[in-house]
Structure formats: C-alpha cells, structure tokens
Image 1 (cartoon, rainbow, N blue to C red):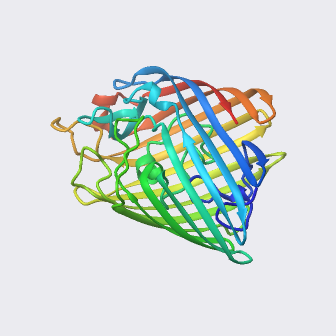
Image 2 (image 1 turned 30 degrees about the vertical axis):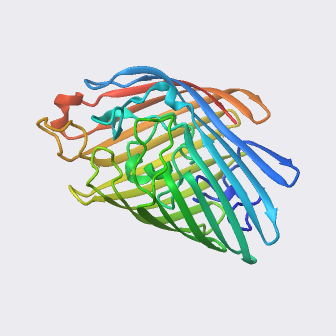
Image 3 (image 1 turned 90 degrees about the vertical axis):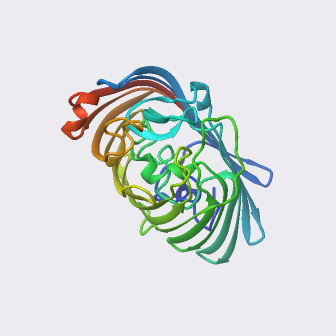
Length: 385
C-alpha cells in the first residue's frame, strides 16, 4: 500500500502525519475495494491493574483502538481517509490507576493525579490529499475535525517500540498529548527522506466528556522536521505553541519542543525497535520542565515479545492545589518491563496474554505520600489486528 503523503511505502507512515522507520512491519487487514485500497488496524486489551504504594489502587478495565484507513490513486496524487475510534470512555472519566501520571480532569474541577485519563470515542477523523511534484517529491494536506498535529514523535499506542505496553507513558504530556486535537490542518512537503510539516489546531486537550467532540477554532501551531536516513531509522524535531491546553489552567499556554529517534533492527526472522524521545514544556506561568523516554520492544519469536520503558520527567502536579507540596517540582523516574505471548493467531488476528511490572524512583520528600520505592503490575489479555 503506497503512502498517503508521498511516493513511498506506507510502512513509513504512522499516527497523524508522523513517520517511523521504513522497515517497520505493517500490521492490520489490507484489501482493495474497487479503486480504493483499505486498511483496518486495532487492538483491545482487558487489563487487571495493581498500582502499589500509599497512593496506589487496583482496577480492572479495557483499553482499545480501531483505525480505518483508505487511499485512492488520483492523476498525479492521492486522496486518503482516516478514522480512529476507542471504546475507552466505557471505563469512566477518571480512567485507570497509574502512579505518577498527571494531566486532564474527570469532572472539570479536580485534576487527575496518579491516574491515566481514557481516550475519546472519536480519536481521529481526517481527510488527506497529496500531489506528486517529481520522483521522491510531493506536497500534502491533512485536515479534520479531530486529528493529530505535526508535534512530537509517533503517538505511543502507534509506536512499534511501545504498542505492546498496556499503559501510557508518564511523559505523555511532554511528548504526544496533542494526538487528539480539534480542528487540525496540516500542510507538508516531502523530499526523498525528508519531510517538513506544519499545523494549525486547537490546543485545548480533551475534557471529561469523552463521548463528545468539541469543534473549537484553531489557536495553536506546530512545525516538525523528520528525516529517515535509512530504512531502519527515523528522526524528528518539532516545536509548537499550545494555547490553554489544560482545562483547569485556562490562562496558561505551553511552548513544547520535542526530539526523537527510532531504530528498527532486524532480529532473526523478526524485529527489535527502540525509541529515544525528549520533550520540553515551557508554560507561560510556572517552571519549564523536561521529560525523557527510552522504550524498546523485541519480537523474540512469532508469538513472543519482550518490551520495556524507562522514563525521567519533572512533575509539578502531583499534589492538589492548596496542599503543602502543591506546585513543587519533583524529578521522578519509572522503569517498566513486560512480556506477551500470543497463544492464538488466525490470519491477521493475534490474541495474547501478558504481564508488566514497574518500579519507581523519586526524591525522599515523596516517600510520605507514595511510600519507599513502590512497585506495580498489570496482567492483560490482548487481541490485535
């Protein structure tokens, strides 16, 4: 299946208009319906979550994503359709327990702390158009009421290095939290292994009404330069201004800068992909902070995958306003390791069972709130196309 944005294989394309290594294996169901080439890709995880320590909690829930894509060749170009849905609103607006996670709200009044918010029912609805200028050169347009602007690396649930991990990164709001944005318009230029794209979009992150889509006018912007120097590599740098991203801080804008590199190594018969990413958030009020992520997934055999993620990030939202440590910045670290075994494979469908364990490191000041070096785990069953 050719790419939506240029004359290269679709294996280069990932979430929104982002790129990944060309050698990334392509998943999903592919078909041809008349003049349209189509793809269906998705997953559903049933998870038991046990977060340890004094602020931990347990919960059983499900995360999911269904992505539909279609491409039609035109004279000198192509048109594309992208739709992505999730059933995560079923778990409730407060999401699931995740130690040291911050961002967004479940009720419009109190911020979520030590919990990961669910994703919206409608995660993406976009139309694309590309026009070939010369061999290896094209321009493209991506637009929709909900989509992903040109900011950050490929979203965590679409990165091959991270998609087997059932939990969200605690660096999510430093790297790829704009992956569900309202009113996105992106224009880009592709030249051989380079891509330059820029977006206008609404910077407000989704609110607690996860079944709704709020059509807001563009008030934010971003630009990204991507370079795939070889089939195994993809690198990007991006920057943008998010106007009022947090619902509970309507007067605060954030200038975000990210950089990342992904490498997809050939493993005997399989693959091994690793991503290193950096994000810098500079709010108009408060202290600037950095987030680092290193994650990797190794496909040992056709049915076995090892995965891991290490993160280091400065957090200033771990305590509610009005409490003694509210607003203070703490540099926290997290290490997660996991394994999944696909015990059933039927054509494009794989069903597996897996486990994930996490440990943490943070300043001693947080011991009274979190305990000393708590540990957490998840047990899950996953179905994936």
